[in-house]
Length: 390
Image 1 (tube, rainbow, N blue to C red):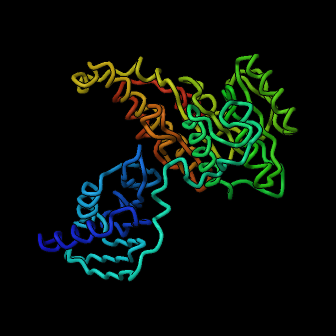
Image 2 (cartoon, helix red, strand yellow):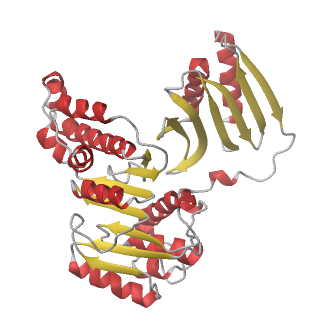
Image 3 (cartoon, rainbow, N blue to C red):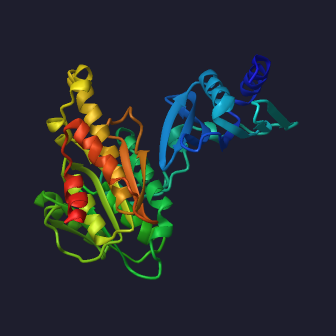
């Protein structure tokens, strides 16, 4: 792309990247192995306007936040060889950009003559259109200290309210994988205080009308007792909590969806392995405390990097979750690694979502080579890959 054409795109960006922007979709990749699509939307974060880009690479989605100028440069760079089409919608108008094979842009702009009210996109995050609505009392949120009896969100618990709604968005995405004509069995391993377990039951059964049986499992008996009392109080007859261990649980022989949120270290691996053996249609996992690989990995080439404890710990966690996703792919799951909640709230913000569909991915050799390179051990590989070989 010539410099004058870049300047033209920058000018368009400065005109349309403001509070009136609705969305931008950039697509048509030149390299099928790289970024396939990017979606951009405006957000208010701590009172400041930012633009969030969602990059789709294969089955994974990555999110980045930019200022207006940073986002404009990012978009121009994408159109300069990576992606070849952009559709922009704003309350100011529409813009369409098509890049030729030679890198020359064809630009069409349709401007609106009049802009009425302020954009609803720029309301504060608290006024976002959540699945569970602020102002509508939800009994379990009241009892769990997230809401007042009038439906007002308690200020100190707003992050929890956002987390619950974010989780329900992931549930909403997989609704087509659940069969509304029969009972769906869902197990939540390591359910803890069960904010998300109650939210899942409320959303699927009370709001969406699915016939479901939800089982919460945790090692803390006091937590189990408290959750069962709350479930009985709300009349959630098909929601039950049990004291038990993930690895040894044998209470059912069929499961449609397995949820594991912050199950510590290898407990996540045992939960995933259980889900695969049950043939669960959906796996939702937010891993926690990935220590196993960190303890064993040893690679001379990486020694200058691994010598820094914090870096080693984070890299081990990322390697662990990426390999878990690949192992699920090997077992016939199309897997995504998604941002659960903003990094500013917790570093444990990765959600692995696996949906059973299609054939198994032939990637066993690559997984084993990576583990050999790292001199690493991963329980999920032992439970599923070695099991398949025997």
